[in-house]
Length: 107
Image (cartoon, rainbow, N blue to C red; front, side, top):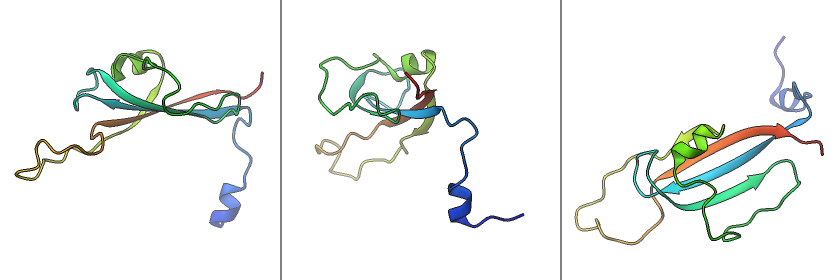
């Protein structure tokens, strides 16, 4: 049986008590064990409302530490070479790593 997209997304989750938390870490280099220099957190449980700049210390020293604490790595930034003459331009943080974990939504 084939469902429409709306029907598929309207189905009850396998475990309706689980919610996703998202952690975005910006690292100093493309290596997962390099230092965290920026971060954002999002809480799908609704129990907290983290915002950028809400702490002075990163949640983990490196991306590898987040993995070892149970976060699942979903995406790493694509490595793109700098254009000639733009090696030292200030811009976005290029080494973005996206992590997630599923947690109980109840109490």
